[in-house]
Amino acid sequence: MLHKLVSFVPPELRQFALYVICGGSGVALDFGLYSALVASGTWHHAANIAGYAAGTLLSFVLNRAITFGVMDAALRRLAIFFGVAGLGYLSSTGVLLVLIDLMQVNPFLAKAASIIVVIAVQYTLNARVTFRRSE
Image (cartoon, rainbow, N blue to C red; front, side, top):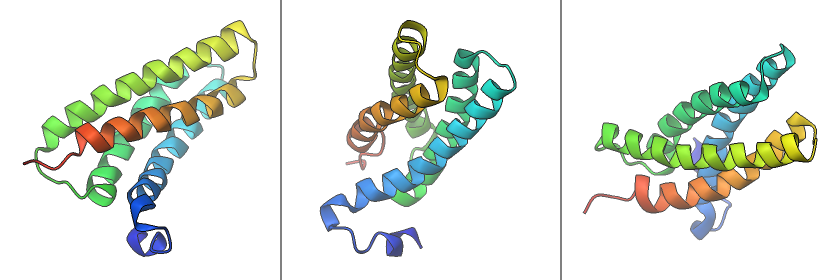
C-alpha cells in the first residue's frame, strides 16, 4: 500500500520517501510521548529517552518490512539499528543540550529541530549498514 503511495516519486528517491513515512510513524510516537511526558512534568531528558526508545522500535519494525524489505538476520539488524539509533540519540541530546540548556529555546521547538538532524544521520547509516542486503 505505501509503495503505491510513493509511486509518483522518482525511483531514486522512493526508498527515502518510504523511510520518511515509516520513520515518521516512529517520530510521531517519539514526539507524542515526549510531549505528553514533558507536559506532565517529566524532565525533558528523561522524556527524550522514553520517546526515542519507543519511536526507534516502531521505526525498525516498519523500515525492515516496508522500506528495505530485508527480513533476514533480525536480531543482528535490530542490534545495528539500535546502535545507529544510539548515534541518533546522541545527536538529538546534543541538539537539546545546546538549544534548551544553553540557548533557552522552547523544548518543543528544540525537539522538532533535533528530529531533522537525526533523520539525516540515521537514514544514511541505516541504508548503508543496517539494511544492506547480505551478499
